[in-house]
Image (cartoon, rainbow, N blue to C red; front, side, top):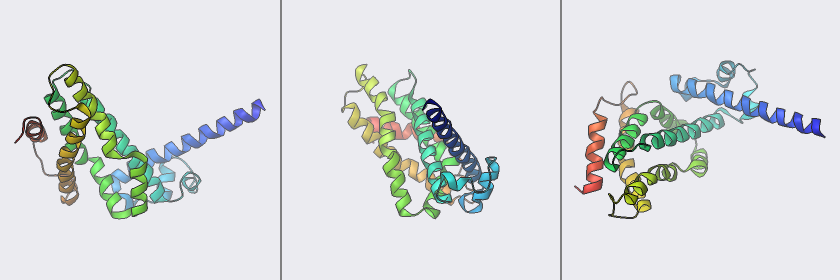
Length: 210
């Protein structure tokens, strides 16, 4: 019984490892060349696996791409949390966070989202939203900054949870504009802008009014 359990654990570990290898390989190829120009065989080769191996872990290339998108959203959340994890005043924390968001959607994440819109069906998009709900994750990342400011007595206008939701709702419009600029730029990159200055203006308007 012990041997069977051990073998089952080892098989599960290999399955997880193989799945992660494929997602890693697919991520790099999708970023470099885009969803349409990458085959499952190329992903398998990049992962050091046989050409049929991806279909053991994923039903299709779209299924694998969905996993890459979910990972990218998680990476974005982690980066946002890191940007906010400072002892700076609230205004500065929010500036850094928004600058990070604007820069991220103008880089690799922009290509991923562009391919998501072009090649992935509505049911898959719905599944992604059901799995990770980006707006909920971003609110959770931002809320501690407002809570810390409220505890310090430097932010009293509205409850921290409401402030976090309003900040995400307000700034996501700016993030979406940056993303649209990226998707429509000839070279796939947004025009050069001073994102830090732009973020500062938006944060100032949010905290103090227009």
